[in-house]
Image 1: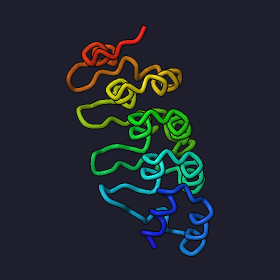
Image 2 (image 1 turned 60 degrees about the vertical axis):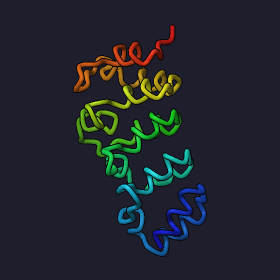
Image 3 (image 1 turned 90 degrees about the horizontal axis):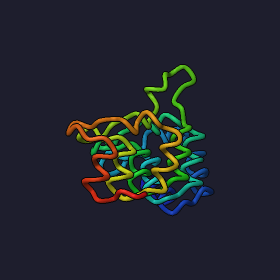
Image 4 (image 1 turned 120 degrees about the vertical axis):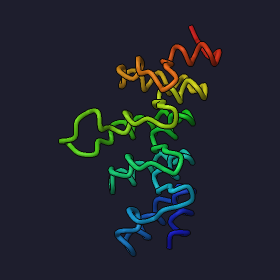
Length: 161
């Protein structure tokens, strides 16, 4: 059944997705794919915005899951320049009572980089603009190399006026 779920999420087939979840209500939470990715990672990588919404409605906790490369779905969305999905993942709070510092956007990947570092690194400036409005404190975040977004942008020659 996990293979069918993967296929539905990969293709963005929301109808098939719901049928599978009706058959096994725990499928979304228990399914794991290569590189320890969950259905939200897959939907994000494929740019399946409607599927991301469906998964978040069922289980917003999946937004916090890290794959084997320590990337959350938000990190993947930022690196791919999927700003609509990034926006949806940003507002997917894990719990009303959890502090802001526990939002998926606050997670760091390898070398201490934030989602904003990934946007600059991969040249996804439109996504960066959307995220900066929401995450101003990450603009000044320093990674393990002592680099802020500006340092990384200059070094990557992706500085835009």
